[in-house]
Length: 438
Image 1 (cartoon, helix red, strand yellow):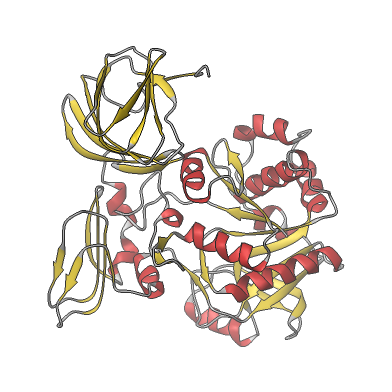
Image 2 (cartoon, rainbow, N blue to C red):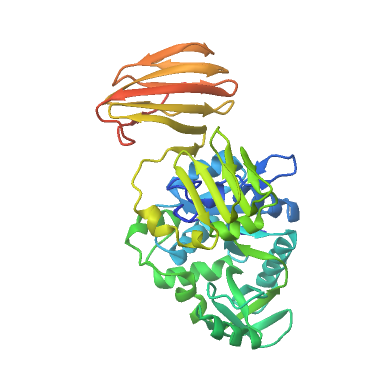
């Protein structure tokens, strides 16, 4: 099975655990088989490979998410990077060209596209396999998966099939309605449109060439910022007459707000927290190394991270975005391909950061023009390279770098470092990368 996972999101609705770098799909909230925690993207990838261990998974995403993907999934997935945001049709066209021109997928092979962050059981991915088989063998140009609705939702578009069979031709599509109209659609046998569909690769490539002037993947990538923003539904689905839908009757949750997220959590507390016996329907998610005590609360979510603290009625948490938009601060934590960092303190001319490098990983070889840096090794072993000179490091060692000198650190074991930055212009743009000679 060839599957494209669409990974977007700005990190606003699950603040403060998400930010501009770590979107909701990378937050580790769900219990994994080994008793630890896994993120939405890790959970979905695990479920895909459980159903089809030979599946070719490609994630279509922005450059800002690549480090998090590599950090959590390693090199097990392909990554198709959008140079900028251009909505779902350009993203799917680019990913399809990537599969064909870079990964060598044939034009007659089926491809399944779905969001990266549904909260579902394994039967969902079994239906994705069915959808792939329909695209490979059926007469329709597009095969959609329709979710059997559990209530008249105003958040989703609706697919109205021609018959009540498990697989049916599509009669019509309906935009997101009000609750009363949604109930009328459901009474007609309508299904939720969850943004899941399959096609033969050549079909979407042909549609892309009809709408965009490009030769191959690299040419499309180079002119991506000139493309019109348009959704796949408007550009392709609504103009296609040969289209069918596969019913999915299983559990399906679109986790986009704190309210829906807490409904999917198996435990009421993640991190250090105490709830007294008078708390009712309270969830706490704490990434800080300090306890949170809740007493006498009802229908409340509490979330804490280096970005801030949220205390909200669960229903009100759906309206968080404009308030978060008004908060202006730098990113305080992020996953990187080599590990992660967390900002501990910010002053006018200094910043203190705790850095963790995974075994075998290293930072880019780089320099800063406007700041000095000091690294104090807290634990682990590794090597630093400063202006070409390599030396081993271990707990207790201190390394100083003046502005302008080139430096990196390589982790032999997990390496924890306290990094102090000193300078009048401390920002993410003050960084020059270099090739490191082996």
